[in-house]
Length: 171
Image 1 (cartoon, rainbow, N blue to C red):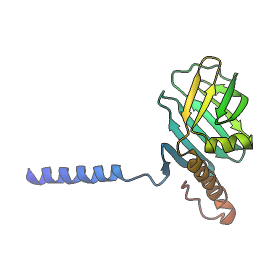
Image 2 (image 1 turned 135 degrees about the horizontal axis):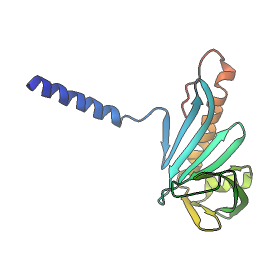
Image 3 (image 1 turned 135 degrees about the vertical axis):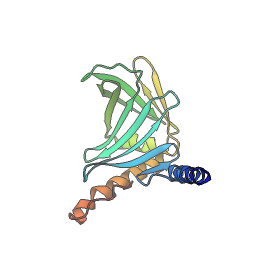
């Protein structure tokens, strides 16, 4: 009986230690989590995400089309295929846009370079809709967005440099 108890305790200790080891596929920079996303062996995009204090999931995605901002909440009920006007404010920069909706999420491409620079420098992002303003803290966003770009550059060129080796998919 003591041997079984000792083995169970050993397995529990090993499992706890394994659970504490960081995932090599995800890099944390402040509250942001950055990861490379692949479909099978094919690299698709890199993402940088966090959840606000209000429970809104915020995700920046970098892919071949550029940078996108997406937000979702299980509380939202949005018309699929509809678009909603918003004003994004980061520091002294503002951006008027229409976000595309799908169920409980919205997304929009960030093409404006001035606004992108403001995202890196500002303390917060305000997303003003017709019904409310979503506040996203941008702490460590400059380092996170740089890592997001590096993730895309590294993983996006992996198959170009050696088409016979699968990319590692590390952020």
